[in-house]
Image (tube, rainbow, N blue to C red):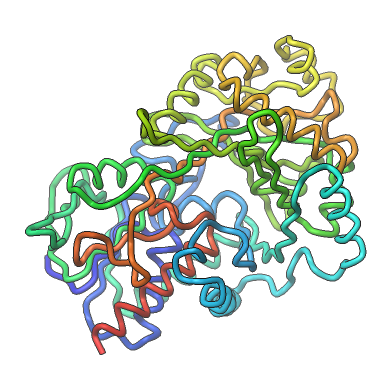
Amino acid sequence: MKTDVLIIGAGPAGIFTALELLRRGYRGRIVLAEKGEAVENRRCPKASTGKCVNCRPNCHITTGFSGAGAFSDGKLSLSCEVGGDLPSLIGDDLVQETIGYVDGIYLEFGADTHIEGIGNPEKTKEIRRNAIRAGLRLVDCPIRHMGTEKAQTIYYGIEQYLIRQGVELLLGWECTDVRIENEHCRGAYLTDGRQTMEVESAHTVVATGRRGADWLDRLCVEHGIAHQPGTVDIGVRVEVRNEIMETVNEVLYESKLIGYPAPFKNKVRTFCQNPGGFVAQENDDNDLAVVNGHSFKELKSDNTNLAILCSHNFSVPFNQPIAYAQKVGELTNMLGAGHILVQRYGDILSGKRTWQKELSQSNVKPTLPDAVAGDITAAMPYRSMINIINFIQAVDQVVPGFASYETLLYSPELKFYSNRVKMDTDFNTSVSGLHCLGDSSGWTRGLMMASVMGTLMGRKLAQQEA
């Protein structure tokens, strides 16, 4: 097969690359390859089975058209301060301007017009004052919450639009390698599990998302694509009663708090807050079970969950942060017999494991029913655990009751953003004809910023045709 643009990965970065090419009147052939299912065929059987069945060949929550983010919480962050380091590459103004443009597209396809986190400036100031007293920084970011179920409808509309406009979707086709000759990318090799196909392309855009970070890292090593070890986040998913988070939920919807707790001073932050949400399990290609959170527009629980993530960087002599985080996850899975571990915060401080009977007697009932009560400290690295404990105590000064005995901590919560691909401001890598976008590139984190990067990629490719 020959094409003008080959996009590998149908997450937000890949989708918006194709979408913007169309909107700019691009006349070339566009092929979008995705190893997962169409968005309308993505269904997690856990809703009926009550437990994760480890779907094969791919987890439906993390893989398929629209990527992993749309099936977790469906939140669009409307500030360039949130979502990774893309502004450091191309500038705050361009990123913020493009956020507005991308947000308009989501609205066209049915996103809720309501914006969370605005309209209460005095209460926001009070929350910020408490954060400052606790040694934390509050990033009050406006949020457009699509919701897990609504996001699926929105991305289905985008999927059908791309098909009608002539974009060729190769669903169920996984990229195994790229074809590089004389430092120029000539295309890629795809397989559907039965046959292999070579796709020759003038431009190859790799947008494989967080799920494809490890694969892209290996690709860079094998082909000498310039990159550097990035950051990996290791942490926990915290769950408390809605009553504890009530003020923050009403004023900000999502409290983005950042701190550098003693004694290690690593960056620790909250991420992906889900008021009335549900804790969920995801499985990667290596059978690694990791925890995440969902937030629906209609269906609500009695709890709020959010991630607390500790950033780790490695360079000398060890420079494999993704492998490090995977080992932490594997050890935690071992203790949970392949399931997510959950432990009460007070039990951690008391130096004891949590028992299932204790969970049944607590005010906070787990929204992940098949999580295994145990001891996450037996697998969590000491540095990460101390950072998380001290950060929770600081957050308690902003949200009284956050550090209560019954607060639940689920593990492992891992975010693989490693392997930052070196690129210029036009998203060209050290190999001509090859571009890397989204979370797997190491430059973005989350739906909106990945969509922004894809949009800008589409513009640049359309300009080259003109």
